[in-house]
Amino acid sequence: MKKTTSQEAKPKKLKVVRGVTTRPGIERIFRMVSMIQNANQACKKITCGNLEAEFEVNRATVMRDIEFIRDSLEMGLSWDPREGTYVCEENSKYLPPMELLDKDYLLLSFFQQCLVPYESTEMGQEMLRSFERMFGIFTGTKNWDAWSKTVHFRFADKPPTTTKELKLFNILHRAIKEKKVVEFTYKSPLNPAAKSKSIEPHLMVMQRGRWYLFGSDTKTRRLTPYAFVRMSEIKATTQKFEEEPEIPPADLLKHSFGIAISTDKPEDIVLEFDASVVERLKESIWHPNQKLEDLKKGRARLTMSLNSTLEIQPWILSWGPKVKVIAPASLAESIAASAREMAKQYC
Image (tube, rainbow, N blue to C red; front, side):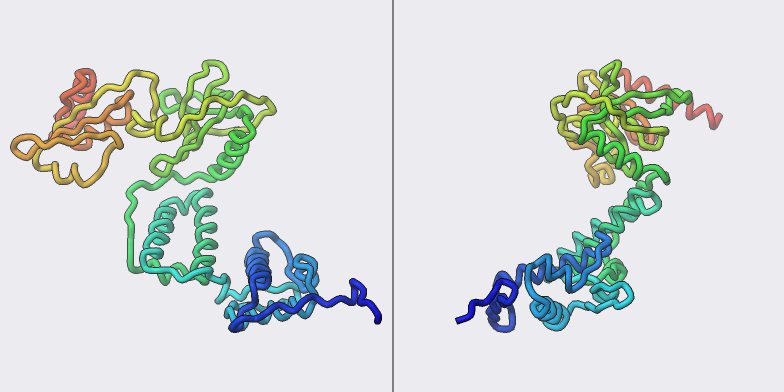
């Protein structure tokens, strides 16, 4: 009896249960779907030949799988003879892996609208493109507009427009991972003269739409936040630095009202608010470690532990005469001085 050679051997036929192939076939089909859906991202052509090679099956199996994907899974799939590749049709770009519930769309709505304020920035545009792709994978369509007309989240902060944000992020992200010193020119808001910086990068933080690098100066060893918008001429050097103990972002900014950090010992900031603004005060969480107490006649006391008062002063002034600084005395004096200077504008 003649033995069948390896070239003549036919692959075992997969069992079909209720019209669905058994596990090896299912795994192959979903890997095939993934390859096709990601072809544009990976700049690859999807042909029968490379599908045969990838999954070690014959042409008939590939064609049967393609037919199953197109007809049974109802994925818009066609052959592009000009490019010589299988492509997803625009009206059916993705194959959704699950059925989403209303609460799932609520979460997706929140994510998408979190990104909208940043669409004028390079970083925002890149994240929105990624979101659109992920939305398509989850829902089977890239038509986000159909889902964005029923729920709206309003975000007050709008980030500054910059064309270098993504470049900075990529350079800094790689430098942090590779533990390499970066050099850049920096313009401080307190000193308009640009200065050269040599920094060991540790962490990137986005605060109210603005990106910051937390890094240690190679000379002073001081950990400082640097705003992306004030950086220029950045480059990663070949100089390596030793990894310092990891500082969780929550701990780093635990006693900060914004992005400023200080080595000073934290002290309690005590503010008392007029009854007319207490309801508005209670509508928001102003700081993670805040304590809010009710006082007589509808007034309220807000206490938070900070190691710098630099960023909280404009916030206090925004409440006008409806707030009074109780402690520390130095902050009360600074607010009073600012109020007197403001009053001069109207004398």
